Length: 200
Image 1 (tube, helix red, strand yellow):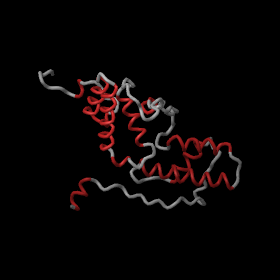
Image 2: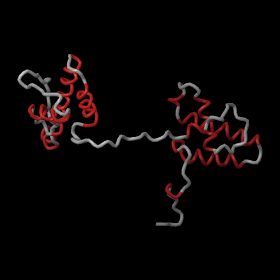
Image 3: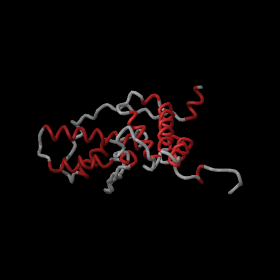
Image 4: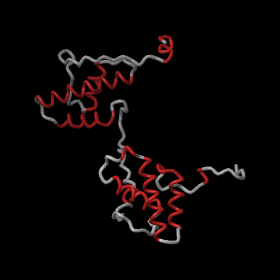
């Protein structure tokens, strides 16, 4: 919908550093267009003083003033012809975005156990018998039970844990439930909104 006289941000040019706002960007665009270097220099220093007052909490940071001039260079798209008090050659690095992280897309047979538990199952398949494997079995079984409790609204079954542990370790780990002691788990479900309202 176009209404004469109305100007929406979505219709305007995208800001280089939105945290400074459009007015600062307009000031910088004005400074770039000034005819003499002396005028541009005075205007740039005035803009820096305004930018400095916008974020007083950052004054304690190292190289704070240098960063302000770097931001000015970025917002002017490096077209502001002045005597820069700092080296602005690395200012472009501020605007560079990091490469996106690769998200693991491995298929998980049972999603509620998660990827890390399946890594533990794989490790248990190849571990020799001994105290180290016994400890990993204990940690794995207890984590499996926690997962079941969380995904089953507070209910879990020790036989289910033992069965799944044997299944996902190809039968290498057989949990003896007559001797194995699970950690004490205190699961208290979040009170519903209705209960919270009644308390008020």
